[in-house]
Image 1: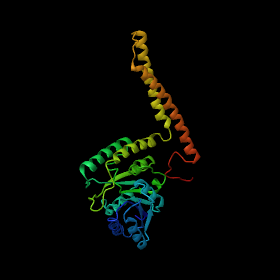
Image 2: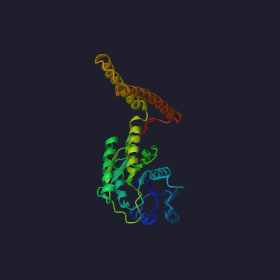
Image 3: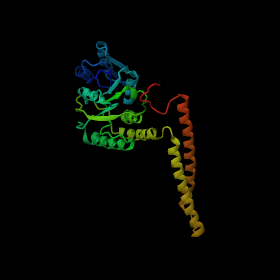
Image 4: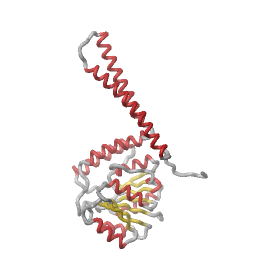
Length: 312
């Protein structure tokens, strides 16, 4: 493959691994039209110093240094913004993924895929704190987004720049990039890649990321299904709430006028709450519609992605 390649590596306190990773990339991808973009995400060790040394000796290496720790999503987004290659490869700096797998991803790209996602089938991590939560998260993400992947958490992925350039990342949404790419019209596949135990340094992932995944998943589901029609979800909930309020009113009326039961019942409170909620949800839907139209029209931003133009 003659296409230019940009390898994007987020780095946070990985001084013990950076040099070895650079050497592996240089050896296994020798002869390719390649640039390496290391994004120092506010490291407090000597990671930035090592990156500067590497950069001074190899013109293919670019370094971005954040003022503070902004997180992996921001680091990947910065790498995407600077990348000049036609194919963008994301890779962790901890040496658990092996750069030797990158040519395998590239070969699949030649078959017309826009995204090739790594799958750590034989993952070398703790069973209870890493593998089981990851398995559950992958199943949930696949179910909610409709994009079936075994391993959303594997950073080793390849993207065509033409697909990724229009996708904006926020929060902790880098793990949802394959789903966002499919939403933009990408053709996606995955391939098994090597995964090695961490030999040096400390993992930056904790069990608390589960909550971040759940919150971001709600956002992704909303963006994929309702970003241009928010009134559908708010209005739908509002109509449901209205009918629940109506049903409560029917039951209360039946008790009072047919059964002659005049004692206090929580159904009256439920009826009022449901009606108020219905009004608020419908108004929120209308307000969201106005905001969406303002967002797209003020930036002259289309609500679609064009793959190709012919004779235009």
